Length: 389
Image (tube, rainbow, N blue to C red; front, side):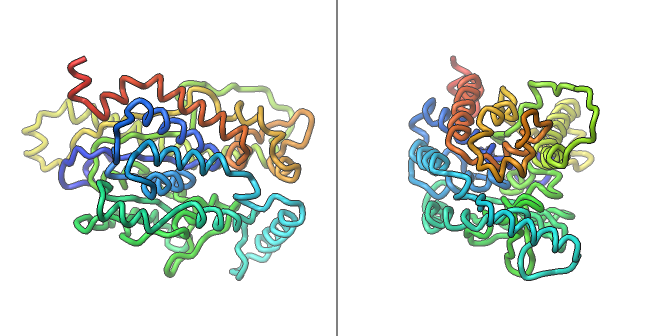
């Protein structure tokens, strides 16, 4: 992938925020640490891309004030106010009704007017409408230093990975196989579509097609930032896979459904972005090994992609277990955490645990991890100054 998608080098920084439901609160902590370390930043990211819950953070940053620090404070307030019942219906009757319809739709196998999803996230629409100023987003793009803001969703009919973006006039869309960039005016539907976890939250109709979570079928999650003109990316992930090896335990019984579901979600939300980063770093090494004249001779349009990747230093699953009792009882049963010694389900719970204690601990972890990358952050934003230190 690297930067072959973009026609020219811009040296513009991009912020790429991955998906992960409630895990995305971690990203706020990282951004908060950056704003504290570099308090004079205004719009440090001309290009901002988000997927799933990361899309909400992306728009939240881009639709705020002129000073980056204030934008992060706004985003932190947004997450601090979140509760499970502000994201999806967690009451007994609400969940029972939606689960009943989900089973009926699955057995019926036909298109219906009511969406086939396990949970009803209609409260999230109201919450986002009351907290995100899309008019401010438009004015920041037209009058400020933001070039483009992008959120990615998957079309359930076409199977295409659509990156909806709002940008300055000179930026145009793209069409590369199953990856498409569509210029638009952003609204709450784009956020709800990008964050609609498959089967858990309902798809959202945009124009002629229904869309779901942007992690689905997006095999190159770094590419939208490259298409929009960046070759310097700050990526904030939500997985500790790179620092914590999984523990293999002996298992006597068949795994519960929640255990299977969490691995499916981890495969979509975590594995793909990590693989894309690995591929980009490998291409960086190959570019350095090939003489520039050979690149030009064979018409290979590649250039290195600078990536600063900040991800959790501690397993989020273990952090979620400490707060599992904050979830409503009906949701605990849904994620398989209603037994004394539950097997699995903590990772699934971490996607749905929109409760204050878990949010605050994720923000603290993100802040701490960003502090440990202080030198890399300084070099990312002020490479000339860092070289003199």
